[in-house]
Image (cartoon, rainbow, N blue to C red; front, side, top):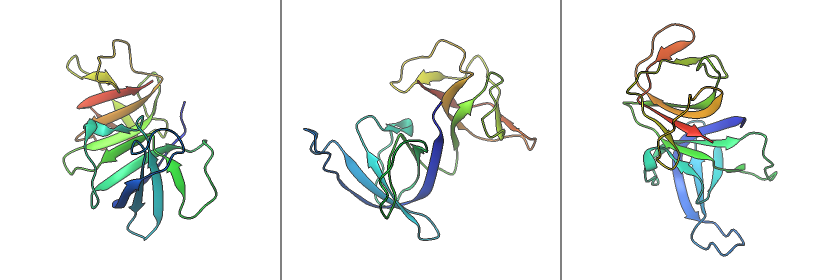
Length: 161
């Protein structure tokens, strides 16, 4: 189980990142600034998953997810290896978290109600054929109930294997 942490803000810069490997141009450093002026640099690698495979540009509002238990250099601004990048849209919500066997998120804030038509995919776009419970999920959804936990029928579920 990944200890997902996140940072939300506006992309202020995107530059090449020298990885020291034969991957020139394959790694990017993305600077993100929140509404309070806090800055985080995300290292974006070829394995970073971009929700809906969207292109991110300077000025876009994103949420970057990283492993809170992974080592990080003690520098300012903080620098994290981005696992998942979600470009914000007003018409949808995205939750990245571990969901238990009852499909409730680890923070107890969201419960998923699946239908036969709920697409459940792997990060590579292939269909996931098992039950998605007890896994790390990237859930795209719309309206929720006002209950606790809020309940929703997801638009799409990506299983983070």
